[in-house]
Image 1 (cartoon, rainbow, N blue to C red):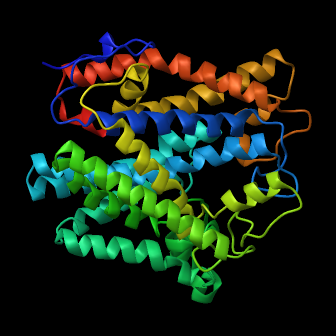
Image 2 (image 1 turned 90 degrees about the horizontal axis):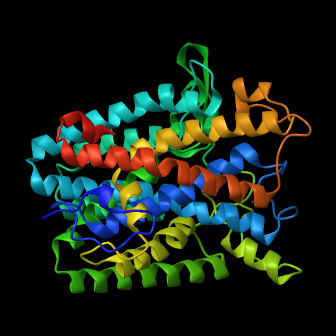
Image 3 (image 1 turned 180 degrees about the vertical axis):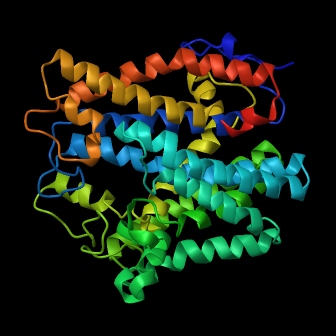
Length: 409
């Protein structure tokens, strides 16, 4: 017998085992990263800070942590998408898995440059090479990759994750008119596409497609007995954390120097204060995610997955479990909600509003706009509470109906 999402309130009371075919820990963790992601996007629309939180000379611990905790979201989106693909393949034929991956991938790319892009800017047409585009393109690539033996997929994914930093200094300009290809693959920044179309690449494909492939291989753990699976998750997670600490402290390998298009401050070295030293230690490159970044984020995430790994939804986590069952619905809805709230709040506080209808955070922030960090957290919690009821409704709908199109949302 399965539990309905409607039976789980914000208090998250223990429930019976969810519907067959779903892994409780994966849904809960997915819900956690969706909620944490919403914090980053709330900060984007409400902050009064005119610099990046990673700016070592200007940032402070609370601001940096607000940004840093959200670093776990993107790599885990890709890892869990790969794991989900593996589990989907256990219930379907290889042809059905391939078809699902490439059709869902193309669907996500379409969403990025239409519905999602408009949510960010409130302009039509709009869009950029963001996380949804990268997820979609990676799924389309995985449609072919999943045909390979799992051991080959493991080798390819590990190779891409470990060695892609060797190409950090390769400049797109070296490719001439094809510079946009290398930028899409491995370099954040503005690009000039064929026919004079200008775009911005925030999430290059390498190594994220490798992270998705690693998630596919990781899916094998979820066919094991729970105790054995948790042992492997603890072992892998602990090993990744230890390797991150070793690489970061020694600056041996795995994080690019400054000035290569990313936001990291480069190598680690002791700062005048303990706070700044800790900030620099944790400030590793996200665009594209360096080896150190992936070790720092995926390692602890595997430990959390091991802790969450149980048959029933733990007390207090019912809402997170529900959010994790409708991630795409949550993603699209939260962008429109946060952007809309920014407009309403700005009007109530007599702050500039017009810019929020014309590009918003992708343009210049007008003088006098923004709010302190405490208010950002308040608006984040407000948004999450508002999202609960529509997401619960959609989770119930997905459980009641098995229409094919619901799997794409």
